[in-house]
Length: 511
Image (cartoon, rainbow, N blue to C red; front, side, top):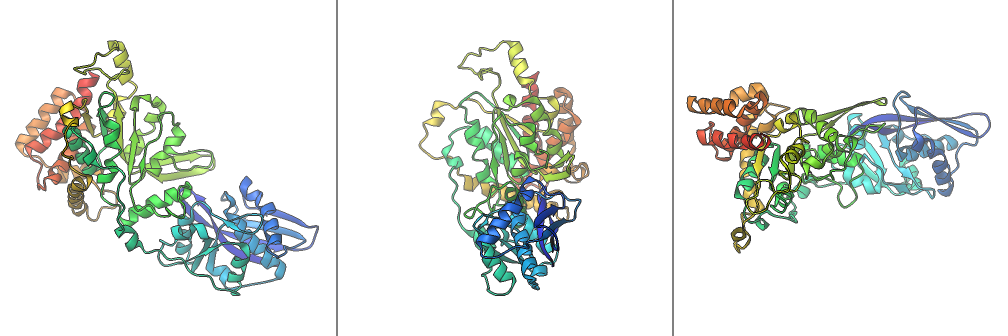
């Protein structure tokens, strides 16, 4: 007897349809699994046979071949347990159903026949819709995550028996639905707020400019100046994600197994803060079977690197290309995978190893050579790719002692959203550019035109500060964002002056 059902396997953050074929014939009882299965898939034979027996069914007691097609695509994970079990039961009974071809099935089986959650439910649902399937059958714990995909029915199942009975049209199961409008409109109060931060007005301004244009930001200051405190509140002033951005982020989190029943959808922008001991692969992704790293998990959100010089030099250097291209391409023997990596990079560091170089009240214990060695842990090319550099001095007592709360995140977010709306209108029709930081050289020429006064000011700054051509583009992008925050149609002298100021700190400190 021959049966066929459909499932899917993950490749990066996308899912590829897999046909699960079972052929039961003559010969000694033996289950042969082919189609480039990994260890987890090969072990499914024992899980599947136990689950079938404990669910009250039987499997073919003859030579049974299970083929996962296409044969040249590697199959990973335990999500093939459920479709393999369904195919084996149907082969043993000689059963057929029209729902076999209409549904895409994925799920891990426990030995008692219950269905356990899997990774990548959202990409699987998207792949099912793209292949024209009418429904996707997934573990009940993953159903809410997949239900955000419109145009396809999502059926959450709890065990093998109810799954087979549904496919054989012997019972009906409820469809899982998610109200996206309600998800996005529901209030989600932040645990932290900018109103809790006193002082640091220049740093707060730089952060507002960075978020408004999605510009990378470096904070330099002594210990206790509030660099980490401010950075952890940046996500609270970012504009809410669009539906497209939320689905992109949820796909990555789904593949990484970061979702659960209570948090099945990323309706808020992610904030990731990896420890400085992280490896190259942990940051940008990789392993033998390429999977996303912290850079991609933070896609459409904030990647915060605290104590920047403490990261390994090789780890920081792998950021250079992704910061330019907004994506990560990982090549391994198993294949080449591209992960999205459109992040707002926020970095923080001390000016020296002891942290007090240049502090007017605390004496620095580092020698000039130690200071130079500490700062040289960050390469010039990487520093050039960070749009804004700002100094975060120690907070004065008069600022700490204030009883009046500072400006709240909600107030700052209003200005940021207004600036982003201007950029959205400016880049209408562009598929790649969403914010000023992503402008191409041609777009800079079009949208960042300067009058004679501004052109002369920029020429003088470039020559005196010995800035690179990349810094030239970044100054114009930041100036355009500052003008957008003021709702100005053209870049003014004050806008350009402020943008130049954000490029001088690295030269004065590293000289």
